Picture (cartoon, rainbow, N blue to C red):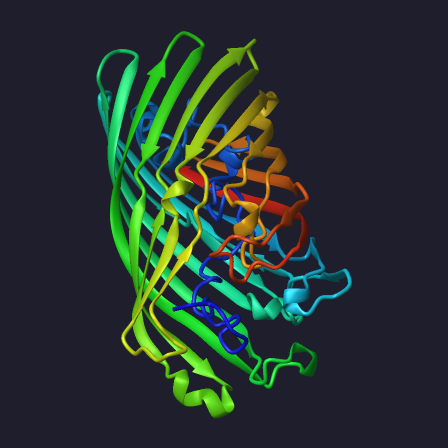
Length: 429
């Protein structure tokens, strides 16, 4: 489909350039906060993970846990949109003077749950339920809604793992990952200029919405080394090649309604492989420090492919280029154990942005970000209780449309800040 001419302007990506939401809290739209104890350390937990959330941070550590079983449940409160400003001046979208837009504010609540069981000193297993990708954005002001209105994606991963102690100091783990992805709403307004004169405004403003769901499987491996007062961990999670069974619904196209029939179809895209390495060590009797480095293969998210069952001259199969970059993140966490089983935790993280500025759309206003965390934990006889808070500041970033496939990119500058908080309970039995 050729994106040229006044009638076709803005139609080519009416289905899919809102396919993923932000703001998420590791690079791209991934969510690294899968346990309150680890999150108080800014996620620097690959080497020293010592509760049931090791299923996510390093499954090889399951074999080093206390004898018996553990069950952990937690959740996050994440502010979305309330501290994001988008200042735009883009004549292509009818913004002739600088104007500032704000997305709708919401609070999202992704959850996590883990179970672990130590069979003997050399063998353990566990299973995790996590929400590693997703969240939501919503814009209400025109002309931003011509690029993205509401974008909502949820993912759930069930991940069983088995850990083996190979030597006195080394353990390994292997795991299976099952992902279910649910596109609840990805919508936008579609402006159409029938007479070819932009000064007269748009004669038709339609509405498109993509929904759908799908599942996929993957795998993960991990390594752990425990020394005298130090530890090292290494994990790898393979990516997902998702294919969603979906539906595209069109409405409000007036005299062009016949050209926009609702249709079932398929949406295909890749989610990244991820790897992390961590080194932790004891400092005196009361403190530990861990430093982690993580990598995400966001180059796997190179395109979104839509295959519609019903095609017309104005609603056709699409391939939208994304061409994201691989990213690195750097994390440090410090734990201070006080009297009476109380722990204070502090952390910092720097995360790179994978999105080239020529593909930076309102649906994913991502940027390099720095996060600072504080956490508290209490370890009882059988129940552990953990809290954390993170302040996450995004660099200002300016979208620069111009690439041949950058339809939907609005020239302008994004400035964002996000608050995260969470709670977790770990029961040992």
